[in-house]
Amino acid sequence: GQQLNQSPQSMFIQEGEDVSMNCTSSSIFNTWLWYKQDPGEGPVLLIALYKAGELTSNGRLTAQFGITRKDSFLNISASIPSDVGIYFCAGRHGGTSYGKLTFGQGTILTVHP
Amino acid sequence: DSGVTQTPKHLITATGQRVTLRCSPRSGDLSVYWYQQSLDQGLQFLIQYYNGEERAKGNILERFSAQQFPDLHSELNLSSLELGDSALYFCASSVASQGSEQYFGPGTRLTVT
Image (cartoon, rainbow over all chains, first blue to last red; front, side, top):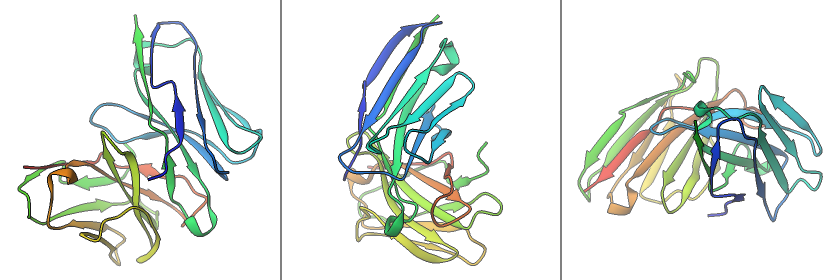
């Protein structure tokens, strides 16, 4: 099935460093979402974006809805060990697709203390 | 805790068998979604129900079916199971049929032997 192109696939960083990841799509989305998944758990919603150009923060996390509506970015500042996990972007077309989410392949984040 | 519950947590069964996965949405949510997560395909949307009616369908196999009951809980039925059906199955719920955020349950890990 269709998936978003999410990069990088994995990141190994030192505690305190900033992190950036992004997602691109060949089609336009009405909504972009960022989730985090810990091992053995379900994805947890971090940030939701609804308008092209929108920039939204949630603590140390900041995400942007690309102006072309075909991409989104997530930044994590001053990383800490509990940031470890898999980060997924997800897009929603809306309309006749209703609530269907299309997910990226995920970015595996490892933070070294 | 997202408020979405799924049972069972783990399920081990043999090829050719049939299983039923159960999901209870968050209080007040009318939409239920099912997703499959596997190593090779990532997170894939299967199907969405809203207030008992099917709303959107993704890459759901004909051997799979789902329904949402009057009390809004949902069941995903998987039949004639194959080895390749081994995966994590997540349920998510949201308030509306589109435009509202999805909150994921802890998942059911299905192993087909």
